[in-house]
Length: 390
Ligand SMILES: [Mg+2]
Picture 1: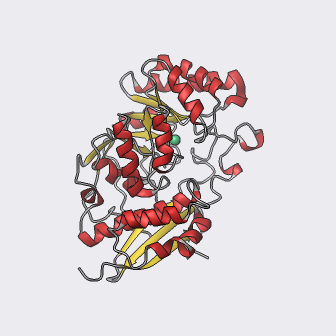
Picture 2: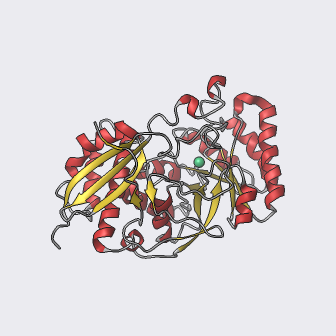
Picture 3: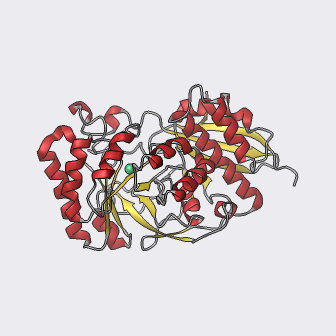
């Protein structure tokens, strides 16, 4: 069909706060005290914005075909990621058909190896890749989950991430994932407070609801072992991201020593099949959680998922709304999905990428129904102050 080749790639950032989910108002739970790798420094313990979790902001990538159809992808990365797309990666995309995701991914990855491999460069590649899948779906007038092989399910049961699992369970979610508040440098008092918070939540949600704890890379092995021992009697389904993503050895040790029934989850800050290969071959995780906007995009996530399937490790992607939902709809081994509570007090349903994207589906009774509109089914909110890459 004519007009399907890509004629332009645009990388945009957004002026003004709130367009990236890391970048929220001061009273938002996600900005408030959550244990992080910076919690060892008291000056950076109170809020995640104090050390700059919002420093980068969002990058938006648009790919436009000769007929004027536009696909949209997003990631974290702001101006530096937008610069990489506009001055390096775009050359591998312009003139190609969006279905050539394999070729374009391989060239973007290989050509950025000398500075990339993980982090910002992979975020940029992810945003381009997602924009390509979106455009491909729009050209075919099909939802992305059709391009992935068709739906295994259209209805996705969800758990809710935020400080109010009681609210989430009453709303119909499978359960909730609490952010850990206190890190190792707050000692045994902090450890007891962490366990007490989970115990209160268990009392509120009842015995059957899923309850997880997200440690956002804040712990060391000794502390994680004590935490897991304290959480085991509370029926915690998984403990997430205890260590920095590079510390595969602590993940392996914690998993070896975990109590019966406890799962070790990680991977939201891991990237590419090679990063996940290490986690899988070291038997370091019971559940992996790639973020499709960071791990290399949908093209790479399908490879990561195939590897995980061969190890019988479920893939439950981190956040990322429709970009994850289309993957989950097309995957047998993704039993449920995450809904990240972007409501400031986690007591309401707010679309994850609001106000950046329009049309994100929201859970009803804790369940997302993936729309069958073309592409990922969302539109870029062009009323925002979007700026081209410098
Ligand atoms: Mg997490």
